[in-house]
Length: 341
Image (cartoon, rainbow, N blue to C red; front, side, top):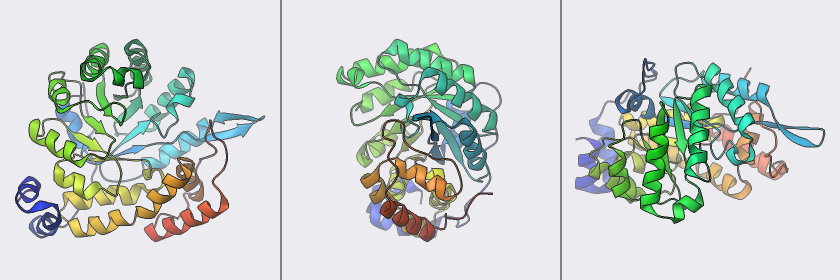
């Protein structure tokens, strides 16, 4: 029984136990083959069938200013690519403080990431208040070596509705030679009709879904006959999103939990659903802490592993001592507290 049959016939709860018994139990730890030539939906699909690690942008205080720590970023990137399994690397997304960075800073970060990414696909944030600005930013990401541009429309574009967002994504995709991933957020709620229309543009490679709408994932998988990868967010809902038809998940926690986040999705693909569910539950404390303290938590997690974090640029207060202690306990329970040498 495949995951669609399990989901459709017996429901999400019992589907998990059936899948864990009906599929092999060994998760693969081999990376997808590197893409040669122009990236297509088919060649990108194996890379998108895992996790997307959304990298933070490390910062440091210098002369009273918060500056990008480029050396720390390069070191973090070298740590990320040591992991086995299926994952992509996303740079200058929301947790990468995209809107707090200058175009020049983003360009330099893309260039460093492209040099360090090894055989992984590199996704570069390419948002903008207007379509023209988004095109400029996507072209800059392409020039710096990104394989894919992640396009989050501005709230202004989102408020203009489905047709405007559809045109926005298509114009960006036609203006670049790399892949494009449209971003569905709480303020850019494009419809299933738009997802289906975007299939006609070959370099639109996947859909990032950030709202936690499990029904949307399922309906999109059915409507498109799984012709486009669907990538929702976070570890806690990973088992349910997998059963609904998601191709992978995005993760900010993976900055410091990459081995466990990758393992979670690999277990789901191998049918170890009950194990994956238990592992997903272990991320509950990290979710609670992040909801309380924000993305500075991700930087503190990297620091606890001996990597580069630093303050947030727009809100440079450090993680309070109590939060840091609780984070350390949660990381110890997940087995991700070892320091990187």
